[in-house]
Length: 277
Ligand SMILES: [Fe+2]
Ligand SMILES: [Fe+2]
Image (cartoon, rainbow, N blue to C red; front, side, top):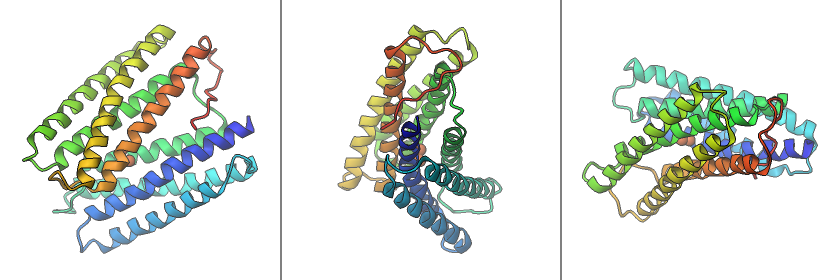
């Protein structure tokens, strides 16, 4: 069990600390030159999450679980701070205090939701209170489907308007994922009666098909952007970033699928202990 704890903790922290580091960069790129305080704050978060990422990579499965517990607390603290920073930036944008800056409010809200997700994962790991599998399946899918829907919207809005075909494709994904979110919410409101193995299995199958095709679209977009074959204001690292988040979602869907098919639905007290890695 402590091996699983160390493995899960390192997997989450390695993935999400890099994501937090990159959010700091994206936010900084969207500030105006005169917003030097915000730029400095963003740079500080970049350095903090870079050092967390390096530390996470220096630990291994053999690291003492107590060391990892303390590390998770330290990371939790840093994530809480970047969450506050992101919400402060959102507040400034929505109050029109940063006219001409280039971060969409939805993007800032989105990156704060990802910080909140990471913070909750760390708290769950340290307290050992993981959600029962059927609840985790619905909650994680609702979270990630919205993340995917947002990505499609960002891609659509950051492509040059003259890239009509790609913009159309991105808008198509945006609609598709909005529909999937509604479906997921319906399943959510029918809880716990909706939490049968066949329904949850079908839910995962359907989501997987759409996430795979969005993941492939992001991969193509990333290649086009890297080769400078498409007109856009999308940073190549942002293209790669959203691609990795889609891969993460697919990985989580597969993990749930394995837990569902491997054994009958666990009783409510059971924990999801499958390793993400
Ligand atoms: Fe992100
Ligand atoms: Fe994202």
